[in-house]
Image (cartoon, rainbow, N blue to C red; front, side, top):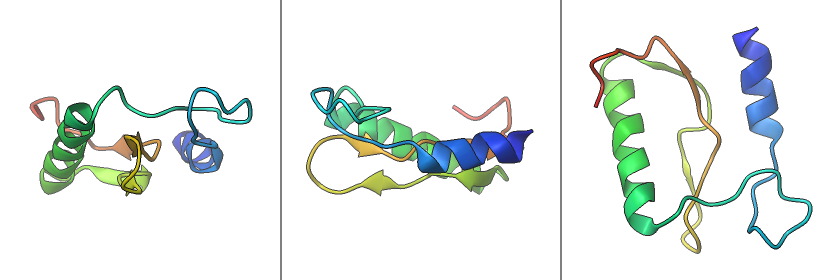
Length: 77
């Protein structure tokens, strides 16, 4: 089942809210994008397995790929 969720996450179209074809939008701010990147990095460093996502998208806007991970520690902060 988790592999199916990861497959769906990889196919979601990212875009701005005004794009009617977009299925998911950007994060709220550059600060939040940096925070998400830190959480992803920390999770991976602690043994999480990335099945989809884990990359910021471009320099314009605050886009981040849809993320699906397994084996994430409850202690990851």
